Image (cartoon, helix red, strand yellow):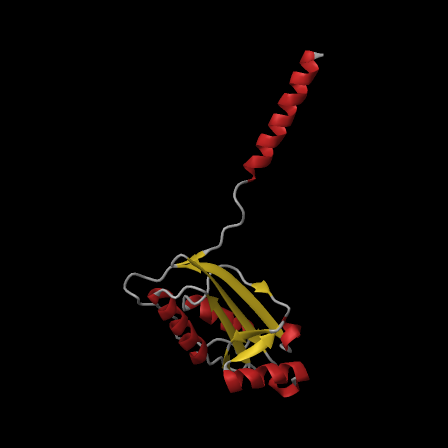
Length: 169
């Protein structure tokens, strides 16, 4: 009887030790800028698509890691992705959305009008700061007020504003 109890205890301990070996939760990728501050970007144009914008932002060290598709329909967009990563010890989230300006629904029109007018839109009773560049909208979230994080935010907003994809067709 004692052997059975010991065997059962060993089995439970083995199970618990294996469950603990799953490792830590998913870690976020980290974004690091070059020491000299110089970011090399190719001079070739990007397609005027959300994918082209994402490639441009990744090359410009504005985002890191893989994108995750967002529920873009909620704000009237036709596509949207989110990047989550760390920068200078803070978690940063960058959301990029594309709108079809030729066939905006009421939700999309209200969202874009609000961002044009006051630099934000309302989502779930919360004001969300956003930046527009033609048919693209960017939401940049970083709670850090550190000087490096603030400078990065401004750099990313400027990079976003400078995106000028070329029309294919």
